[in-house]
Length: 204
Image (cartoon, rainbow, N blue to C red; front, side):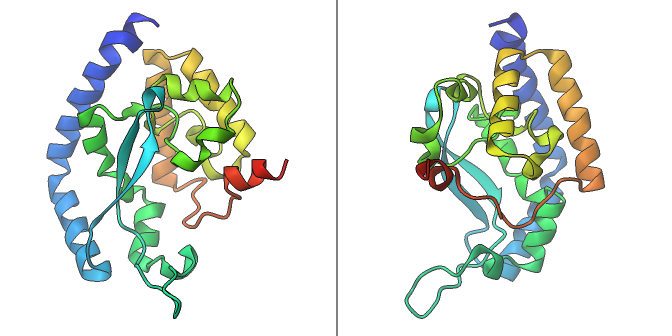
């Protein structure tokens, strides 16, 4: 573990997250009001995810889907519950703003492997578990190299590469390329069409 990873990365994360959150408070409030009017409560969607050393935390995002259910009381498919506002928030990555609070708390970093659902934990290989040796990130190496348009194996390969090569220069590069992708709205899928990892690997 280098000095940047051990000391300075967390200091930079915390400082930048606090400043950004303060600057984005008006945007945060406006989106929260729009979500409340459009989809009701809760405004924030939270879900348990494994973080560094597989410690479970609750990742936060703005809500993008309704809670509509069928006649049997089961939630409707995601694509039927996703609202126009929700699709817009996903396309522009504005739904990720609440994760600044995760960064401030220390659950996440700006840059790192994206935190996936807890159900996937038993399906990682020993090498892939290296993705949990660092704090998960709002964006990462996989996100600038295809995001939702690459395979699970490719994503994990990028996550492992990042965990083994953390540096200030790499983080700056990822942050810059992420900003470009967000502005261009590149490699974004508003609905998840990828087969879940636990189902995919359960078939093997």
